[in-house]
Structures are given as C-alpha cells and as structure tokens.
Length: 115
Length: 113
Image 1 (tube, chains in turn green, blue):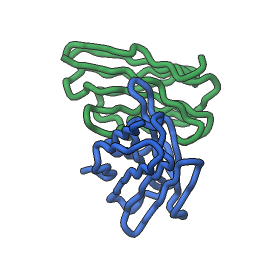
Image 2 (cartoon, helix red, strand yellow):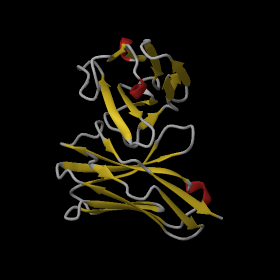
Image 3 (cartoon, chains in turn orange, yellow):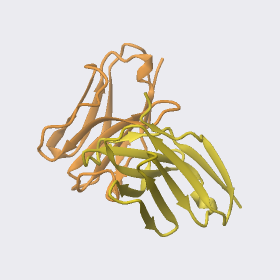
Image 4 (cartoon, one colour):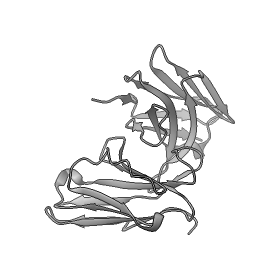
C-alpha cells in the first residue's frame, strides 16, 4: 500500500478481554514504531523494531502488553486483560532508516476504548 | 512528570501573520528536538527538527529556534496559511535517539482567513 495501514480503526472492548492491533508498514521499511496517545496527552513511546535487531520494548507499560513483528513486515500489538486506562489511540509508524523524522510515516491509528 | 511541555493548548492567528508555538523541556539530556503536525483522524507528520549543536533550523516557512540555556524551543510559521491549522506536537530525544521520543501534549493552531 501507499502508506502505513492500521486495523481496526476503532475497537471497543470489555474490560478484561484481550485485543490485537495490527500494523502494516510501508513495504521495504525496516524500522517500525508503536506509540499511543491517551486523551489529553502527548504521544507515548511503546516499542521499536529495527530490522533483525532485538526490539526496544522499554516503553511497554506492563507485562500485559506485547508486540511482535513477523517476517520483518506486519506487526501486532497485543494487550491482554485490558483495563480502562488502556483506552487510547495506538499509532504505528515505519521508516526506511532509523528515526522519526523525514522518512517516517505514521498510520491513522487505532482508537481503543475499554468499557 | 512532564519532561516536554507545551503550555498553550491553543493558538489563533490571522492568515499571513506569524505563528509562534512554544515548547519547554526539563531534561538536560535531550539533544534532539522535532516538531510534528497532526490533522484530525490522521497520524502525525514530521515537520522539522533541530539538534542541540544548533540554535536555529529553517525549512521554507518553518523555522525552529532552540535556546538550550532556557530549555526552550519554538516553531515559527511565516506567513501562516489556513492549511496550517492543525495540532502541533513538540518532541525530544536523547543520546542521539530519534526513535524513542518524549512528546508534549500539543498545541491546536487555528489560522483564520
């Protein structure tokens, strides 16, 4: 595709359920980032993948959060036993080189609402 | 503990005038700063960046100024256009990291025709 694609665009889930958020990066981009934006807050770093290197998971807020990137392409962010504080817009970005600057593109995000 | 602060949630300017968006930071380890623009229902898009070895970077109508002693940066848009109306985020990285960024809460800029 032409840009970073995220699915679903909206997700409403009950507290305690697991959710999976998907990110399809731009073809050929080796770097992939997950951020989230809670209501009234700035973007918060979650995890970073670069090529075959071990991901930087230092931003994941708890062990209920995990992410993987299969085949260096599609990434899935999984949240287990969702809590209301997990409600946010989850944003994925990709770039051909490391860095959230000129060559990085964000998807439109997945709005997650935990009720 | 907010390390990057955008104290003005909104700003309104007339078309053709200058827009000045401000950002303050508290962590002296930050050495790379970026500005992003975000339209509703879209992801943020990179606008301009500056490293701590510089105090100014210019790209067309956009200029970012960095005052390290004051831990302050600003984005100037001249002249402002209605299409510039968006939320602007300031972000900072450290140790040369430009992927693990700390963002401010954003400032909504409205440029009136």
